[in-house]
Image (cartoon, rainbow, N blue to C red; front, side, top):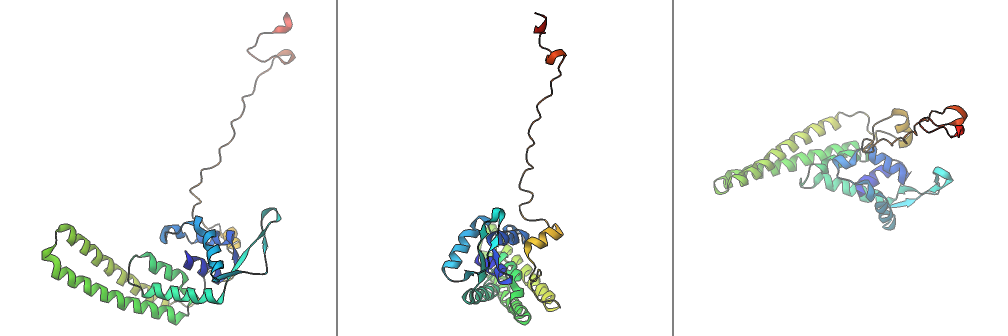
Length: 232
């Protein structure tokens, strides 16, 4: 969550609602297992440890209320770069990690981002060679489930090497190296494009209030089906 928040705020200062909108735009719950409900607690913690700070400008929300706008501090920027590099070079524990790196890679220099992916390819290749050696040496001594676990890991590493190779090539060929949205406000982008946001399909349409059936009235306001008491 810290990397997602810091990389978004490094692009442009935002208040909490804008930041939540940007995370929904990135669909982080799907690929980074990030829950939006933790956002404000994360902001409070990052401010407390000095990685973000409120800016002098404050945006007015609905009803004229002021919203706290945050920016990344120098310490927060250093931590973000350290975290991105650590993720890129870490042993592969989950495929979400490299996706998290790619989402924030434009905040590094073009050359550094490509170099980190090249190092990742080399590291994954070494892990793959080790996995294949283990399969070869341990194969006769493990049951079927053990073989499946080793095969799963080997297939995973083969896919990650192929993907990292593809990603490095794509980044190397990228001519425009900057955050996709530039300095555009996320709310303006969403309003202009109508891009689908994460969670848009979760909400059921509001229920319409049931209409009260109309009553047909006869003479002197008599309701149909009721006895005519005027004749009494």
